[in-house]
Amino acid sequence: MIEHLYAHIPFCPKVCPYCSFYKEASDRNKTQAFLDAMLAEADLHATRLRPRTIFFGGGTPSALSTPQLEFLLGGLRQRLDLSAVTEWTLEMNPATVSLEKARALLALGVNRISMGVQSWHDDELHALGRVHTAAQAERSYAILREAGVPNVNLDLIFGLPGQTPEKWRASLERTLALAPDHISAYCLTYEEDTEFFRRLQRGEMRPDEEVDAALFELTMDVLGAAGYHQYEISNYARPGRECRHNLAYWHAADYVGLGPSAFSTVGERRWKNVSDTAEYTRRIQAAQPAADFEETVDAATRHAERRAFALRTSDGIAADPVEIAPLRAAGYVEPRGDRWVLTRSGKMVADAIAADLV
Image (cartoon, rainbow, N blue to C red; front, side, top):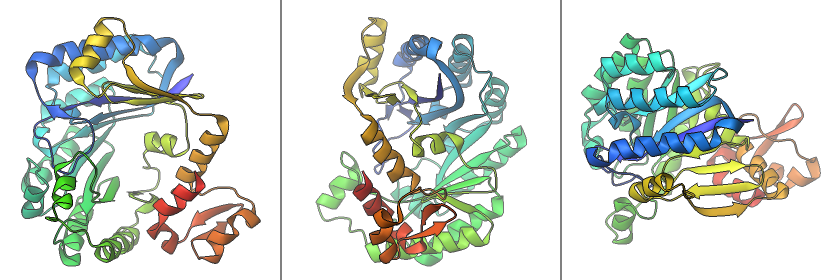
């Protein structure tokens, strides 16, 4: 049985200039048909899917109204065996949080919220194209706690143009003052098909790798000193609050993705749904495959992927000392029991190390 389920909700109140995930502006005229299609796609996997983790990402899943969320999540409960679910995450934008919505999500089984704060400085939020203010994000966090959400992650971004270590430290400290269960801190990247990438190409934006590295080290120091365990390069958690769904990805577990642009990997088969909501909906309604890309991933490739992702985590990998010798000689890995984990300097170049392992 497949134990991990992802659902992609593409709608956003506003398309942020740095975001490379498939998304589109909310459109009430197409939402219901999309929800029907997603439930119909879930039907296709019902006999082989008994999830332990569910993750609703986007886009902005919380851009859906409370009745729409009740329709979608309730429909999944009717179609799938959710008795084994231990973690159900839904991403929320601070501008779309309400007490009614939070309580409805809890009643439907969601027990983890990931909220995209990104920064606690309004000028940085404006530069990122966010639709919320820092004060609104703080109110939204309080609403989630008032509703009784037991597990909250806050997303942050560093490496913004002109960002100083002092401003980043202030964002980290304001986050810690709220005592979330989990913190994700990502370095800004310039992905193709984003406005930020186009600005980069025009020379309007210039990333500074030395500054980014200093901010990353500051992140590790501040969050580590506060008791948050860096269990993956960009993810920090209180003990026992690691994201189980993302850990499943990093350890190369099988998973099914629903919705436009969603990936799935089951055995040696990997596929991606078409990145177009209207076309996705049309195909599902016509009983046609929603995928527009498919490949075979053999056992050797999956093993290499598993090692590359696992090395990014605090679990590390098992490896022959001779095989790992070059990384150890460079000071990038160290032994921990019978496994090898990244050192602090290794974490600074984790992407390059992972690319070499695949």
